Length: 98
Image (tube, rainbow, N blue to C red; front, side, top):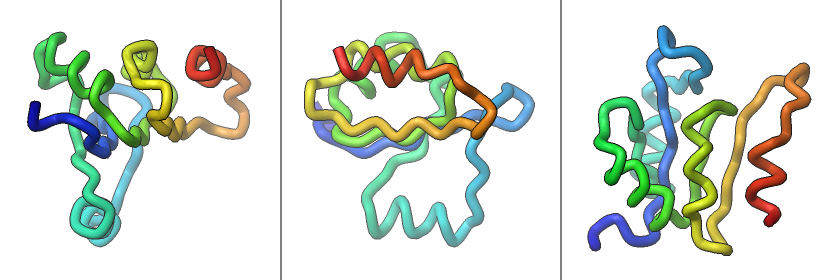
């Protein structure tokens, strides 16, 4: 499978709620130097969303429903969840620990 052990940034459009805003330079560094692929889950079929999480090596995402798939991740997948300082909801952190 070509998705095996990839690095992903889960991106949403601003109108969909929480999103991570990157400059073009930041995107270039993340994709070219660190081999991250930026994906929008809302544009993918469910099976493709599941494949991303089940085969990911590293995932960066804003706190939100897109992280619900982390239960499919391998034990050693690294998850970086970006949330605001006022957001005390650590549900994805708890899921990943189990």
